[in-house]
Length: 557
Image 1 (cartoon, rainbow, N blue to C red):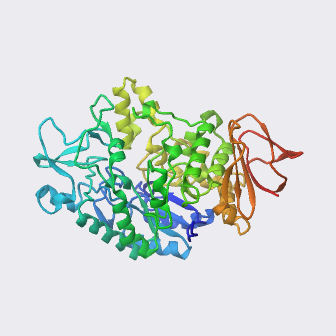
Image 2 (image 1 turned 180 degrees about the horizontal axis):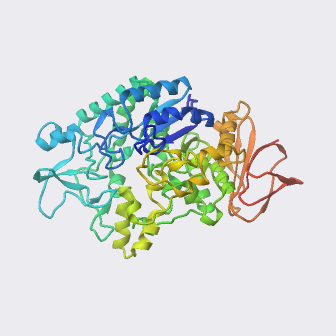
Image 3 (image 1 turned 135 degrees about the vertical axis):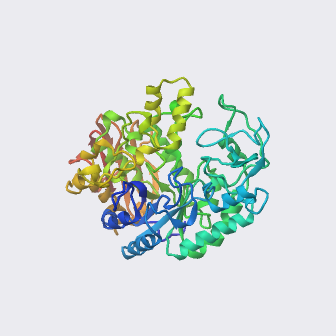
């Protein structure tokens, strides 16, 4: 693997609407982000990914873009965006935007022109088909529920394709003119000084054509769209062209949202001449999900399940490229609430989870609030929910026969709103996020979980993240932490996640993922203790007595 400038960095995702509100309207904004750059720099962050801030009706919270060249007034102005890029550059930080080009908004100029003339130039920017009563071109189910087909506004004889929300019509990537418009926009942003992009839902740009049905997997008569994606061939032609026309000439950093990749495809995605710089590891994110819906999925992963996922992903990637590791993002519940049982949720277990994923081979992404151990929120009723995906899964649960209370409990564990509650800065009004009324209710636990309190506590979760980042960037250990080989250690030992990182140094990472203490015999003599989430290390005769949820990193001789 050829070394790249970004390999030793640390990345951080900002959900702008919930990060920091500078003007009291209840919505986070670009000036708010600028005001917190020093906080992020002090944390040790180098790369900032911003979820969409383009002009949008926010049907899917900005992932429905009405103008790729404009900043939504809710978030600020283009001048604010340019200032953010400039201020980040002063701090040796890079700004990424979300590249959302599988679809746009139904309020985009292209779609409005397509509605006016479905058979004209812009009609071919989308998938528009003739409409027959009682018959759909295919039975694919939208990611947000219901068929992927919707009547074209004002044209009852036509219908358009949307694999996400009905206000997110899919762009027709088979049309070269669409691709040219996309590349033109990408280069426009990169020329402004943008560091690169996180690339959203990109596998969906290639459809299996002509449209056809798949076996129905629910009583609605529809089929999970994954069945179509498994048969869609040739997405690499589009992605390779995009890389050649945009990313590579700018040496831009790109991270792809890629699911279900095959081992033989990894080189194409993130190899030396791959489409992207890196892509996220979603193995543990999708584990335990049921095709029936969230109500039938596992709310928690066991330590053994988590271990099997991360080790399998590490083995699959090997030395082909560098993966990006996460425990949460804007589309997932809070990681500490998904991987740790409620009765075991504490600072020690949160630090353990942070340590395990941070010490894996790959680029660590931190999601806002993760560094202080933010947890899932509490929903009193379905009326508290904003997320379109959660609302759909609630209906699915009700249709499956669950009562309202049980359905809410089931979907609450997975709701994307868990990660979208306002950032918890202090114990003041609205957790210090806004002087106004926050767009989404603040998690009530902000009084005990907030940045201000943790900055004053050398044993806080925030302090531990800083130690992890410092270790990754240290001149003495950087080569091993970033590039060292990962070798599982005592893999069969239940609820123990152990592995070595082997480069110019040899590091041993041990995580006792349980309440019960255990004893672990070291494979060789300890040279130095580098990290410990507990106060003491009980080491005697080459054996470590590990406490509940203890996490340690040792240098071995």
